[in-house]
Image 1 (cartoon, rainbow, N blue to C red):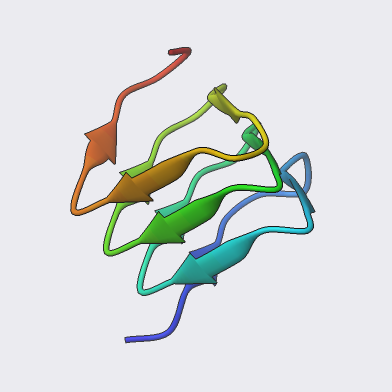
Image 2: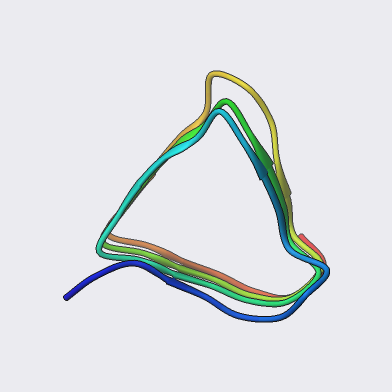
Length: 59
């Protein structure tokens, strides 16, 4: 399954994302996201790896 980006306010900068769903209002900068769901309003900073996870709203 390809990565899906949802919503116009999602911001992704220099990220490595595979097989994941990224919700509206999410900011990802320099992170690695694999087989995960990232919900609305989440910020993931540089150097972070999220794998096989669901990250809930505004965390």
